[in-house]
Amino acid sequence: MPVGSAKDSNLFTPLSYYRLSAPVVPLPKALNGETVRVSSQFLKEAASKHERFLAFACLGSYPTIEWLAQSAAATHSVRSVGVFDGIKILEFTPRSIAPGNRPSKVR
Image (cartoon, rainbow, N blue to C red; front, side, top):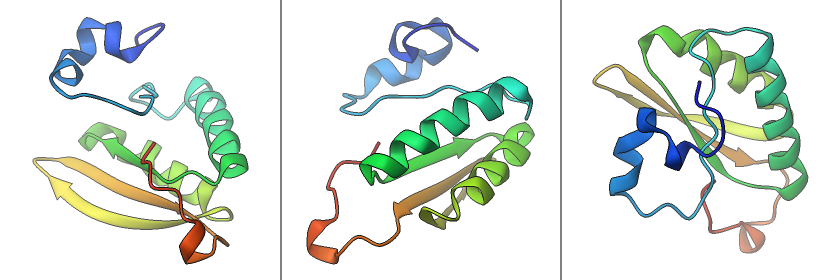
């Protein structure tokens, strides 16, 4: 897992092609203590800010994204966007927000 900004890491070179307006939170491939710690902090912030976000996982990281979905279930609705070339994508939308007050940014 890169330390610091994902945008500055050679591991995330494909991100340099896209103009990002939201942070990228890299997680270890395996579901471990570090993953739980980083993910829990991220979920806490996303819940407090009522933020919508997407999660991506490669085939070996499916347990991590499923854990993330279960952990966010109380604060976010989780929808499977699909699996594309082995990359699973989930959309997390905050619960209990009036339709007119939904944030437009994807985190």
